[in-house]
Every structure is written in C-alpha cells, then in structure tokens.
Image (cartoon, rainbow, N blue to C red; front, side, top):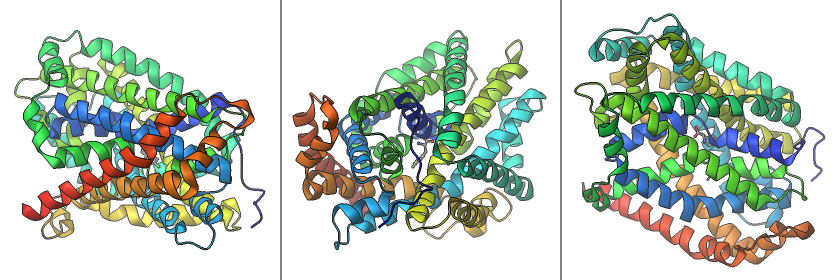
Length: 456
Ligand code: PFF
C-alpha cells in the first residue's frame, strides 16, 4: 500500500518525547490517579501501580514504539503489513475502537476542567465541603452546558490535528508541557505545608497490606497504568510511526514513562495532603468529583487562591488536550493510511465522537437512572471508563506483547531498536519481560478479576 502524503513526522527527538509524554500525561494522571488511589485503599494501590508500570507497561511501551517505527504505519496497518494475511490487524482495529470510546468520555471530563477555570478564577466555588460537592453535582447535571463544553474540547482538538503532526501536535506540546510541570510543583509545595498534610502523606505512603488480597485492585491498577501511559490501543504505535530511525526509542520510552509517573505521583502529593486538611475527608467515596471537590476548598483557603485555582485548571485542561490529540490521532491515522484526506478523517471522527459523548454527559444528570444499566451500579460514564480502561486496554496490551514477543519476534524488534548503531543494553531483560512476564501477568490479573466478578 502506498503511504499517504498526509503522514507526518516529528521535527526532533525532543519534540517526540514531549508529544508522547503529552499523550501520556493527562486527566489519567491528575484526575484519575488520585481517584483510583482513593478507591484502591491508598499506598498499597500506589505500589501495585508502580509494579504494573515498570514490569508490564514500560516493556509494552517499547514494543509499541518499535512496531510503529519499523512499520511506519497506523495500528491496523502496522499489524497487517508486519504479518500480512493473518487476523492480527484486529488488534489494531480494537485500538481504533478504544480511541473513539475513550475519547467520548474523556472530552466530558475535559469539559468540566474547562468550566472550572472560570469557576476558580471568579471564586464561584466557595463554602463548606458539602456546598462545594453540591456545586459540582449541580454543574455536571446540567446536560446542555456540558454537551457544549465537550464539543468545545473536541473542536479545539480537531483544529490542532488538522494542522498535522509537526505543526500541530508537536508545537502544542512543546509549549504546554513545561508550563504544566512548573505549576504542578508549585501546587504540591503549597499543599504539603497545609495543617493536615501529614495525615494525607501517611495515607499516600504507608501501605495497608490487606489490599493485596483483592484482585479488583490489581485490575484497577493495571488498567490505570495502561490508561496513563496511553498503551494497549496503538497510540504509541502511531506516535512511533512518526519517529525517525535515528532517534533512540528505548531512551525516549524511559523519558515518557518517567515523566508520566512523576506527574501522577506529584498529583497525589497535591490531592491527599490537601484533602486530609479538610475535616471528614473520605478519599474512597469521592469518585469522579474528587479533585473538583477537594481543590476549590484548598484554593479557597489560600491567599491568591483564585489565581492558583485558575492556574491549576488551566494546567489540567492543557494536559487533557495533549491527550485528546493522541486519542483522536489513532483513528485519524487509521483512516489516513486507508487513503482518506486528513481533513475528512478528522471532521468525520469529530462528529462521531461528539455524538457518542452525549450519553456520558447525560449520565451525570437528570437521566442518570436511565443510563445506569441493570447489574452495573455506575453511570454510563463510569461504565465506559471501566470497559475501556480496565478491560480493553489490558487485553490490547496482552495481544501486543504476544505479537511483538512471539509473532513478529523479540529478536526482530531488538534489531529495529538497535538500528543505526543505537544501544539497548537491557535488550535481553526486555525480551524476557515482553515474552513471558507481560502476557502471563496480564492474563493472570484478567482471569482473577473475572473469577472474582462471577463469584461475587
Ligand atoms: N494517557 C492519557 C491520560 O493519562 O490522561 C489518556 C490516554 C491518551 C489514553 C491516549 C490512551 C491514549 F491512547
């Protein structure tokens, strides 16, 4: 197949690292990670999460980049051209579906963060913890407003993508990422000097080992790690496909995984000390509203809180945007590789995702009960997040590790990764992880979770 002229490439390795880290760092780190730590019992979740990142996800990140760089194709074509005439392209197709599915609820939360820039700047969210929680509940229940906000997020994403890989994604990431780091470090420094900070730190750092017996916690940690690193759906295959052969993919992968993990851990250092400084704070029951309930309270007690608050939600919107870019880029690149003009692909997908986002918006409001499916005591938005993050991404990761480790072959992947004289000293360890540890560990966690669900 001919490679379309609309395929792009990165301008530099630093540009690639920032864009890939921009894809990885997002709502998953700042909104999702603290929420999952809260649900998963604190420090023990953090430890399981870190094990998942380094033993399972980091090797898969390298595998995705190698496959993308070697095939120079979007996910479906990457599998199809590496092993023509086999059904492996289905793994790419699953990734394209995951991209659309995840984006459809992701833009809803990104819309909330956009609105909170305004709320924080104008000091609209004030009062007792109950009042602040009530404000969030009333706001997300406003379907019309939230549909508009989600569409705004999608429109901005589409606008940047239309500019192409180098001018669009890379340029935006270069500006946005450094600002994000600085703001987050400032907020952590502030949160750590609050009165209840020590209790929050203890919750975050001293594990309660009883959590180790619950397979659902492992499943949530694994899903969170995949989601946070943008893995299991071919986003990193796509980004790897724009990477030059002279750029070292393994050290780039280490940067991306390291930055992503650092931002998630920093977000916890903001949320838990701040949360525990509020009397009666219960991290396990806060759900999607956790940061929206805790942070305005924190800002409200700070001099210049409006400024800090607005800065934080700007940061979060930026982080979300560099991730929505990559979520939309996966299905876009699939269509571009099929010969679609980039513009038509972006516009069509934007309309489809926009339509799909409406049930997630409405599931937070008046028709919430209608969208709560029998047997699932969660909203449609939560259900989407669970299906895609906890199941589709790990299953995608399982299949990618089998494909790269066994079908394409770890040796061939290492050849690709060491092309043009690049070094990869940990190659034997990586081959062992991708062939044995990744597939077996993911399979084990999936089977245990499924058994627990059916037994329960
Ligand atoms: N990694 C992003 C986050 O943590 O918010 C979400 C994401 C982006 C997931 C891109 C998957 C993906 F392909």
